[in-house]
Structures are given as C-alpha cells and as structure tokens.
Length: 64
Ligand code: SF4
Image (cartoon, rainbow, N blue to C red; front, side, top):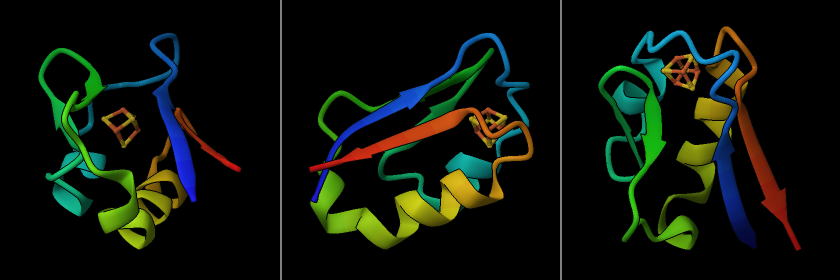
C-alpha cells in the first residue's frame, strides 16, 4: 500500500511525464506536485510507473 508520494523539488525538471502517466495523482506546472485529494491505492501501478519513468528519479514512493 502506498502511503506517501513525494517529489524532489531540487531534481524535478517539470518535464510532464508523470502527469501524462497518471494525471489523477500528478500535476505539473512550474514543477510536479501530488494532488491533495489523490487516492494512491486506486492508482498504485500508475504511480510506480511514473516513478520508474521519471528521467530525474525525482518521485519517491513510500509503501508500508
Ligand atoms: S516525471 Fe519527474 S522530472 Fe518530470 S515532471 Fe514528473 S517528477 Fe518532474
């Protein structure tokens, strides 16, 4: 179960890939952000895919 998703502000380049992969959880303007009302458990596979595809490895997924 995913309990936290964090974006590393130092390394995110605002490329938009995470939003393309899972727009229900990620939104990107001048940098990526995790939507406040995002349901991580409904989109577990998509969140992990976004983290793997992030070219900056800026997405940290914490599971319990
Ligand atoms: S895929 Fe990674 S670098 Fe690109 S916007 Fe998302 S968090 Fe930032």
